[in-house]
Image (cartoon, rainbow, N blue to C red; front, side, top):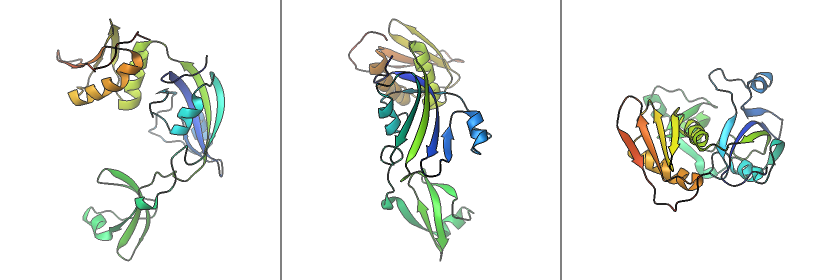
Length: 231
């Protein structure tokens, strides 16, 4: 069965730098340990992504279209992966700003400034150069992909999407085109609407309702979309 646009696929992957073969990301714990890339607090398990919705880098999204289940290798240029280096994303920041926060800026230190993640490149003469490019910008990469299955059940699709995108574990039910997601967390109406706008056309649902398990209140998000058959 060939993978199509908006299919939900479950896969394991390992990303390596093309130059040097260093592993920078993997869903496989044994690979992470073997390659010296293990992170103690990371969760190693297959990922579930919806093809064509930017849940993964563009190169993999495009590569998987038309592919069958099984093992594949995708060699990607920097344009297809994490982008080219953009010199406009190198910023000069006064050292005093770091001292105010009691931070000693050292090369390689990753910091968050006004919600943007950056990496300190140099620190001298009272000035600090911070690089806000993705750490792998400008790098060619190779991904080893193992596509395990294409999800068919709509409740599983919604459940896995919420877990993947929001780290939200929810019980999901579907009845007559209405999907209900119940969890311990309350979802703000604005976020509920955005989620529904994204998922409704893909899944062919009428509306998506969020319920907090400890309350009776329900956040209902009904998008204005053309009704389609349930997948």
